[in-house]
Image (cartoon, rainbow, N blue to C red; front, side):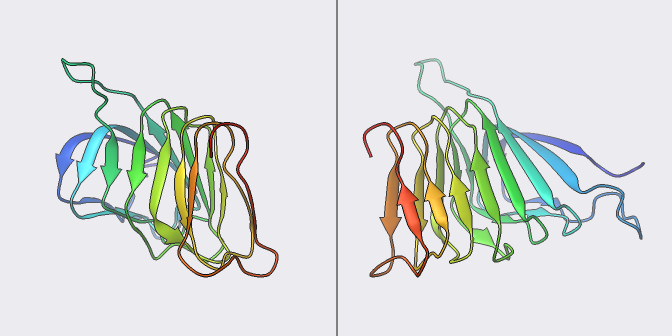
Length: 173
């Protein structure tokens, strides 16, 4: 197939547009792996709406002083992705998540830590890994598990919705 299945990015970008992967009339892929290594965007990272599973793999990068240089996506627009898997050892921040399906599941096996600054939608789920994860929730109606690590969960509303719960896992939460 001529469709893109893996995309590797690092450095500073305004936008990253992977909105048309292969320009095929019939989708040839459902999964995309996005390898990040100290990628910082000031605009939107757009993923083709045919992609149902987005795998974000991070690599830890440090500067000459040993300070970690995290990846930060200003806005992730993965409008077709019902599953976003985050792995690797580099810190990653998703500052905004535009056009995500209402039932998107975010799963992290990342050891560096995942931050999702934008409030997860009420029907979205998050399962954290061993890194220090940080997420925001509104009136979420799903079970949220942050996993190991020193995690932070911020409620943007008065309370979780009916059926919503948070299991903060091990670590100082």
